[in-house]
Length: 302
Image (cartoon, rainbow, N blue to C red):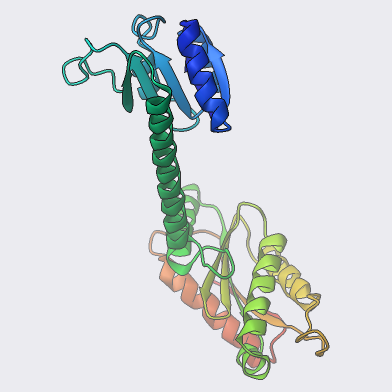
């Protein structure tokens, strides 16, 4: 870990560097708050050891500046001070305090505590990010889950309504997926869904709203596209699924994958149009495509 040392006492600095080198940390030394701040802005430092008695940290309100935010990551601050300093009555908002004279054993212990706290904080942030992703993305395919798709796509519907722009919806389904799953097992079935999701994402525009609806059904909202243009997107997806190279095991047969799609398209979004009705229309169009033999697109105008 990189640790910034802000001290102008040669003996104290030597003790600090000796401890940090013994714990295999990289020490970056500074003599003033401005130089220290520039290093913090670079994102290279997470831990600061600062002496308030022989530097300008108090004069420049260095600790308060850090706590004000604007840095790439949270910073742990160990403040070296004299015994006259009382953090209860003179708060400097540091994470820990070390009193002079600096003892190598005590410093070693405080650095270890700071490391553990930073590690715990990083783990909590990572867990928070994972929970947020779980709330938005389907864990198997990485596409938006149904709830997240509905929220995002509803926003697209309202934008289209305000601007009187077209909007299309594609509902997609893997043909004979239940049979494939029963014949080759859920591991192959899951692999099919992941590859199909990848094709849908690649064949859609970067700003299209793409999600997994349920089971082997996928859904895409296409702002600004109508009729045959939306149909062409669905055809690109179907052709991409046909081209997937996947075998059932190391020596198993190559699987021939096919997909059906139903397109619901609106030239203008009227005040009475609600998103569930558009989803229902796309789903009915999908059923028409499957009833006609699958592996094709059925287009429905609202």
